[in-house]
Structure formats: C-alpha cells, structure tokens
Image 1 (spheres, one colour):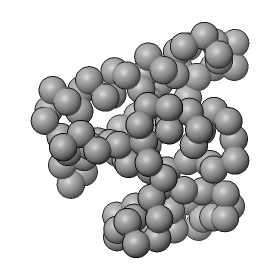
Image 2: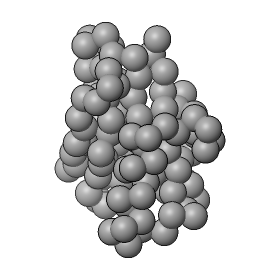
Image 3: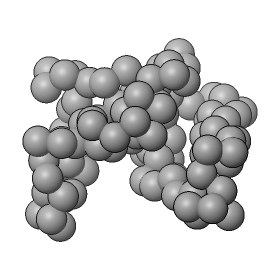
Image 4: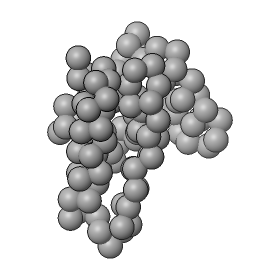
Length: 106
C-alpha cells in the first residue's frame, strides 16, 4: 500500500520519503502515514518535522502545506537541509523544482 521513511536528526523528524502505490493514491493513505509520523514526533517531544519535495506537483508541496508545513527560504534552510537538497541534485533531481519544508512543533 505505501510506506514512510524518516530519521531523527537535530531534534527533528526528517521525512526521507513517503510513497503510496498508485492504486491507493487519493484514498488517504499518504495522509495517514504523515499523521502517524507527526504523532511519533510529538510523542518524542521533537521540535518539528522536515522534508524536501517537489514544488510543482499537487501531491507534494501543496499536500504538506495543508498539514502546516512551511516552505523554507534560502536563509531558513540551514546546512543540513541544504546538504540534502544538494545530494538530491547530485543524484539527478532538478534542483530548481525542489524545496525544503518544516513543520514546527515547538
């Protein structure tokens, strides 16, 4: 059906990937996965969640904004997320279409 991969870094939960099988997309599976990650971060008393995603796909940046994630500007990203974005570009993703996002819990 789908999965979410995340790691704890710098007192935040960094979502590395959320993936939902095409036959289950649009049925709330991604939402449930994200809410589970959010609940986990709250229980661990983390300061927030971070991720990188595509800006221009409706099931990416706009999807996360509905949960309260904010798209970070260049002065807000920090070294860790800059490194993640640079690694994505080095692996062939188009940097101009990518963004970093954060949901603050504290």
